[in-house]
Image (cartoon, rainbow, N blue to C red):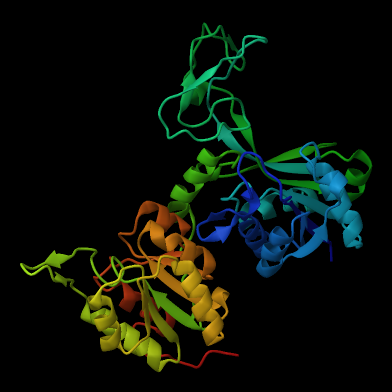
Length: 422
């Protein structure tokens, strides 16, 4: 059987986005997303993450990858990806037929893309292969030294990106002379009449391992192009790219729902998750909220199935404690640091945070969602929260979202069909 080794370079240092390879997109660190797709690829036999960072190594190992510890001389800003791949091959110590370079900064790379580049070399006679996307733009070049300056246009003052002084939310301060690169400026053919062009995505490359060892370059001999979906092409180089990736994740990621054998505890925010986020205040200043009876049935079913359930709220309000008493579950409320409270509760209960499902709706839930293995957002949650979630309910907060979560774990009838496997 041919050995196809996927190498994911993921060093710890990043100036554009600090701790970039650990940044969560769709509820998972970027490095874990890359590992997941490599493991799902049919032709990949081994998956290695090359890193100098213990936190990256821990996240990659938890996702199922082997770890190659990268030396300092291959970990600086000037270190090449090829150098990291060669080092990983040598450190891995097995005969390799095809080696892949997979970039975790391309969050929407798929197992199909990875299989595509691997198959081009393994089965189709290519020496190297890479993922590309159809490109129909007219390219212009500014001759040196006339490089455009950029000015902020009110995007919130983000840090400049590495791809120039400007990033999303910035624009050229003044026009500069330009020259057409891939077109004759006097003739503008229709899109369908133009010769197809393809943009290198930077996501996945495959190379014959024997020749890669000698050339130490990702392109040699015959290079095949593997065409991917252009809507999924995004490279994270600056904070604006990360924001876009998080906004796109709910649209591009397949919805994966948690199974009962992956969850030991369910922790529920209150306002906006068990309520519709509205508060009614009577003439005496008392606050009233509306809850959903189906959510109560869901919580009762979760408890019968042996799951630990906790209500966790930052609000200090008698109605939170009253609802928890009605449900028969413990409550922590009035907590300024919900993530610290969740971590302490998990330690007291002997629950691994990776096996906690946390459901929330607003930005104060994000620290807990980052801690929990299964961050869940209700349907009408803030967009940033939806982007950080691994799963999003169809029901809105206070309208049956908790019952829906219970149905994910126990089935629509809320009856666990079989006990979870140890």
